[in-house]
Length: 346
Length: 165
Image (cartoon, rainbow over all chains, first blue to last red; front, top):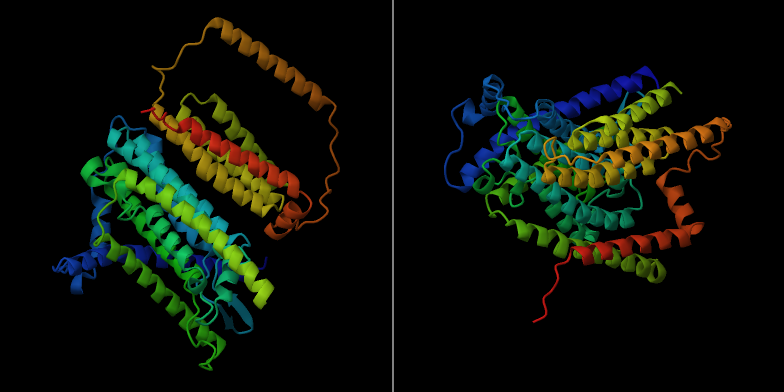
């Protein structure tokens, strides 16, 4: 591996990392602003113009608050919990293709950190790992509410991972590859977007994404009316901040994933008819991709202030008795359609 | 080669920690790290698909369930059942027998030829799928039926007895 390659990837990693942190920071502000809008009030508007400095103030406050580790807690694991949560949230963005490739001089620079040929499975692995942060933190707090939250998080994430995986299998049958960059490249233009061929799969996927991110209506691990604060009841200061941060980063990454898998990623309508040079198409593509991501993040927040929380048995029923059979039916349907299309119209 | 030795050392170290640690939750966490090192081994062997599947299934699902059960049980030093001396002696003898067998087996092992991998691409998804569905179709299907049987059995065991009206 040459030095230029390593340097190029290093710069890309730093940029992606910074962007996900900044977006997570401003998601907190966006959430409160949208909540304000939906409930017909202002939301935070004191710090800076229209509250633009609010996330910085919140972050500073988190750092300077007193840090409490409960006497009965398991100290090492109590500290490892939030660390694991934030690490798993940050590394999942490594395989997402943020754009096509830029030509600088005579070098072609790909805007994807790692193009591994099992890209989707990598994301699944990291998402599956994400629950450890919550479980370890909840257990190490030595508090029954935290433990209940942790156990709810584990069972919820395992239940919804199955349906999520099955909905992805149908998508893979259509695209025929596990590599993220190829899946996005196949959706060039507008009519090739996977949402047109996999609408049911997308519906299942977005429901599971809500559950995996512990967002309303599936935020039972931190259900404050039953469990005080859920798995982070005992956490204070920046450790609590890391848990919240990892939730917002997860939301950002799953929005990016949905935009990339079903909504064409960096592809936009009429991208080849405009007659622009490749570099410009890439730059516009990146902007379009982020526009789609922001759309999904808004959707997450919109749902939060629209739907009430599920009950625990309703959550399990939805996961096991509705989503999994639907996902299996989707796989069978996709298979039948593919075969019929190949043998009669191919 | 040095990467292999480092990862192999870590794998054995964490496997030993799994056995020797007193706290069951720590034990599970060490086992998770052991599985992670095994995944790295698969990547070193160029079996990316196997590595990722090991990662998802063992680390992401099975060990989460283990942890789940252990956290619910809340085992600690006070509630640990004391085993009788007879059981301890039997365990020691059985362990010794295992060591003797393993030592006997390892003594006659000869190091194999280091470069035996014919096709470096065989671990990739495409080739693995072709091998599974062409050469090993019957064993593959039979093992899937086995899994289905286990699943149905688990549901049957977990199901509450329906009272006859």
